[in-house]
Amino acid sequence: MRKVISLLIIVLGIVADQLMKAWVMLHIPENGEKKLIPGIFALTHETNNGAAWSSLQGQQWFFLILTPIVLVIAIIFLWRKIKQNWYLVGLSLIIAGALGNFIDRVRLGYVVDMFETLFVNFPIFNVADSLLTVGFICLLVAILHEN
Image (tube, rainbow, N blue to C red; front, side, top):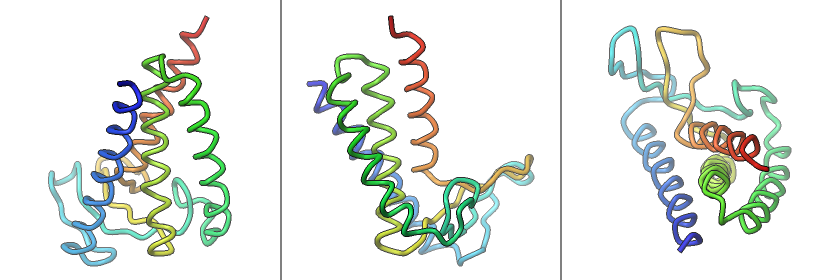
């Protein structure tokens, strides 16, 4: 049952990420913006050929090599720790987020970002980035609660 839950988290995360990216690519021109909550939140179609906060720009080869390694490690840890809830959720979210952005890199050569916070200067991000962030927070909680 835990494997099914993990697989559901991974599949739903990837589907949500890819559907959101497809919608943005269809409805918002590149570098275009659709304000949802003026002064607070917008959908902005941005392409990112780097990592978080647009670091390592143009280093797609690095991510195409690193992501499968990270995925294998995450899957091994998930397999070993699947009976522990925080690990199950955290690692499943990390796998979903990594795969979501990896699909973009392989298919498009860049990652599509769209969520922009207008009230604070924060990098534009996507669903996969959110999954990775929440996954790492869950993983930190799991590590801190381990005996």
